[in-house]
Amino acid sequence: MSEAQSTSSRPAPVGVQEISLNRIRESKGNPRRFFDEAKLQELADNIKVHGVLQPVLVRPLPGGPEGTCELVAGARRFRASKLAGKQTIPATVRELNDAECREIQLIENLQRADIHELDEALGYRALRDLNPELYTVETIATQIGKTGKYVYGRMKLGDLIPAVQTAFYEGRLTVAHALEIARLQPRDQERALEECFPGHRSVASILKDRKAEAVSVRGLREWIERKIHLDLKNAPFDAGDADLLPTAGPCTACPKRTGNNPLLFPEIRNKSLCTDPACYKAKVRAFVQLRVAPLAEQGRKPLQVSEVPYWQAHIKAANTLYEGQYRRAEREGECADTQVAVVVDGRKAGTVLHICTSEKCKIHGRTSRYEVSPQEREQRRKTALAARIQKEARLRVLQAVRKELPGALSRPDFEMVALDYFRRLGHDNHHRLFQVYGWEEKKTKSSWGGISVDHEKLAQYQIRSMTIADVNCFMVTCALVSDLYYAGFGGDEVLSKDSNLAQAASRYEVSATKIAATVREELSAKRKATKPGPRGSKRARQPAGS
Image 1 (cartoon, rainbow, N blue to C red):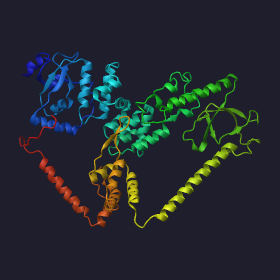
Image 2 (cartoon, rainbow, N blue to C red):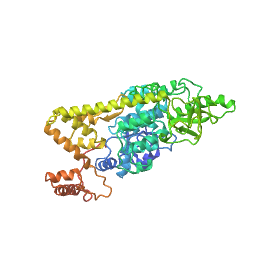
Image 3 (spheres, one colour):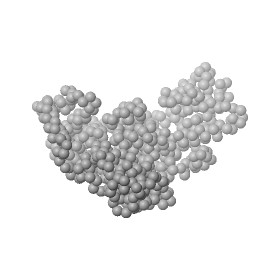
Image 4 (cartoon, rainbow, N blue to C red):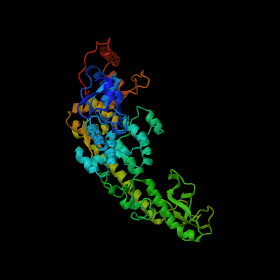
């Protein structure tokens, strides 16, 4: 078919045709957004030799110029053909509506082994948005053979803010990190991203550093539990009150409460956690205003106080007094400086009390600024005693165990020490160590669809099958594996003489210099062997998914 013939009329909706590349437009609804440039070039090289072996799928472009088509499936083959300098591409033309087009794109992308989880998520969401009544989480899960929890978890990835999406696409974050962050509100996702990379001062510096290494998923999850999640059981307000903050409604019916969204929070046992701290704080403020309203009607303006000690408050409000800046009075008028106040945070938010702020007060000035009630003092004594008991008891248990230790470690002790050492190495060194030993990094699925590698559990299995000599070698390897990291910023870095690896090589008379020279020769020879020769002298490559 000539170019003139191919552009003269709309392609017939049957069979496979050679269609000009400039007549095809990529679909804006394609769920795939990430393309590996190296693999794309490899496919282009293959197409130069073998051509496109599997036709792409197109449809007549809705509302487009006569004879133009929209690419439904085969974006990699389309792009690689352009790189290869091809003018046409084999294509199957079908009449498809938008819903059929989106469904085919989703299924085609899901059948790829290398699909990025975020592309998968955006595909599900696009299908749902196309027809919410037809494409529910349940129907999509049935179509692709997955659970509802899996689909919902993947779809939630579409809520990631752009900075987190970029870090996820570029491999700085694993899917497990991304799933944890996606469950947060947008305003908290940026905080979580910065928490993942504590050595960086801003999101911009994280995205700029291509060698940035994230903290463990466990560390991120613990931070979220400490800094983001708030237990509604400790809320000063009624969690079922729909009128407290009408725009938010009652907490008992809110999807951001863990118990109300089992597809998103299946592994969290506490079902009364609020995952939106900003909304929680807004309700606390509204509750405090309700308590203050009767005083305002009397023409009284209460001071705002916090029960947080002044020296522990990270962010101090200008109009709030903190513990240590005021003394509590038993009643109004107890001294000439007594004023009414309201607690604005914590479990006692909304509590109205009386305080004295005068340093020269004859009644309250005799007491310490940090004096606590007898009940609180007794509770502190009990807490301090319990802590002393635990510390002393644990120390004595350790001393007793030390006395019983044999001259040579027993097998269980050896395994315990080796596993504890391994646990402290961190995720990236775990990965390097598995590569050194050639162990399979088998992925496991969590209850809500997240997929990750439990290096600790896999290592424990391997250690238990080792001989004592193997465990000895394993522990030394753990001490050396961190020296495998190479930043490579300037390309001229060498192994430090003070590193564990260099010292071990010297100790065991291993010539690091000779090994480096051998590697240099091998890689240089390999590069020369793969360097393209004169035109037409390339050897035909095997088909690679073209």
